[in-house]
Image (cartoon, rainbow, N blue to C red; front, side):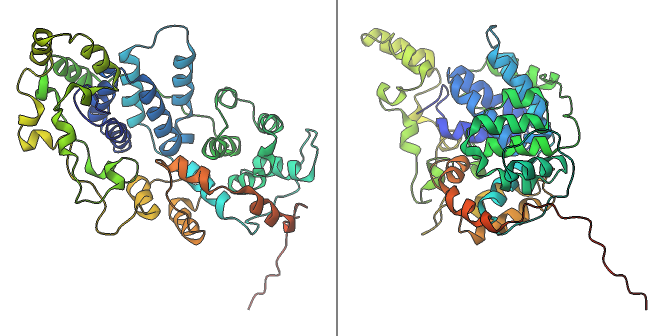
Amino acid sequence: MLTRNLYRLDEVKAALSWSIKSRRDKEAAFWTQELLDSELYEDLFQTLQSTWLWLYGLQAVDWYLQFSAMMESAEPVTEEEMIGFACSLALCKKDASVLALVSYGLADMKEPDRVSPVVIKASTNTELELSFLRACKQGKARLAFDLARPLWSDSHRMDILLKTARQHPFLDTLKKETWAERAVAVGFVCMMEKPKPIQIKIPDYVSSLLQEWSSLKGKARRVYTIPHDSLYFITKRGRQKNTISSRKEGWVTSLDALRGCPFWNAAIETVVDDETKESFYETYFPDDIPDEWSLEDQRKSHGFAVLIGDETPNAEKFLRKWFYGVEACVAWMGVADSLRLLERVNFELTGESLNDSFESAYIVEPLIEAMNSWHLTPVKMRVKEIIII
């Protein structure tokens, strides 16, 4: 599907996430505006939420709470609000706790840690529930997430356990349907500090650019080029060999090539005869039709794919592109250790997103079976003999 200014939809979403991740708030505003102009609101909401979950998570809980409140409000969502949320997220501190925890949870067959005999006053139904709450209270997020793997079979009971560990509106607002969402929930109850307040606003220098862009038409409105690094795996070009080009798709040789995007669907309805067709092209392509644009202009949205030779999308390459240098605030071993664990379990990229890949990889039964040998009895303080020479 092509967007309002003839970018591919999947690539605009990837560019938006990449711009936010790279702290490029001007570009984040541009790609957000592109989705708004295309009337692709659900795609925008989903992209912002997914970017928050995987790349910001526990360091931007307040952002998510404000974003959810806006989405649930009876008041109409404004373009300024959406752009403000994109720009503000780009300036938050990043966090890879979700990636770390789902990686540990996928790979941990052996017990990674033991709980201590801290007092839990809440009533529990099993030793596993008690151990889970103890791990949460001690801030042992990795162990807590591992112990929670079988507990998610009863989502209602698990919700009670999470709120027993910590009372906060975040747990009421957050959906816990995917393993990534479950990871951020468990990580949150293991955090010792309160969520940091985040101000949602559009920087002045971005506001002036938005006004400037609104006056542009045709190919001049295509200010930014899709970042090539953002394409890998999560876009169609990111799953194709680099000998394949998408340029012809961008030529728009018929009006049918525009169908699918809500903006273009409505615009095409005005074309009923040759006169209205000519008016259509004069209105939306005032500086030439797309197949006669320069190669430079075409390359802003279309071009060769990504994969080299016989390459298939590789998990390590993808994760290094998106998570390199990002720390995990509740898992001290972080991203580097996550990559080693995922390599050990032969984690593969499937579907069209990182979330698809983890959802496909999680086969819980063997993980639960491996836990039968785990020691749920708390370990008491161990005193080691010190020998002085």
